[in-house]
Image (cartoon, rainbow over all chains, first blue to last red; front, side, top):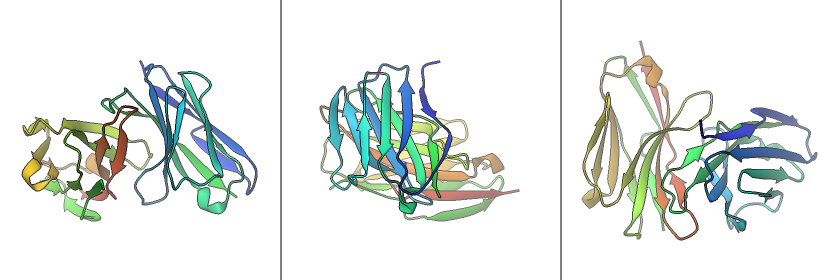
Length: 112
Length: 116
């Protein structure tokens, strides 16, 4: 089945130690998104890629970066995780117009 | 500005009761999509419905129904004969459509608890 896969499902990292979350898709969608969802809050868009074009949200901290080496893969890099970065990170894809959003199962990040 | 408001933070019902989750949105766009997602405790977002702004027909899918009223900018969700498995956080979302991908704007979510 075509889908969006996020690995790992759970990630524990140390305060200040760089961490990378990965997302892959078999849908061949042009657009890939990274959302951050803190406890009891709504998902918040960090950035998205339209093909290789990177679009950063204005309030996304510099600590967060992303890479999209090809259509299928997208990575979220957190350069120096702080305790406040503990959250669920959701990857999503869509076709050009936003019709047909598909979310992955998420990676729950814990910072110790 | 685009905004989605889910005024009900938490709702608690007893199994078999009907329950309606409210969603009000703001947008200046003439074309947009509206969504409802379910998020169980495991965390994944489960897609429930997508509605195009041009289509104001109400929709029913099993025990779920949606009432889209453009005049009041509302997109309410009703669960008929609720079940314990319906317990989850429900998000209403608005998708802006532009030429490089839609951007989902979520409401704050309504936590539904269905008690046996």
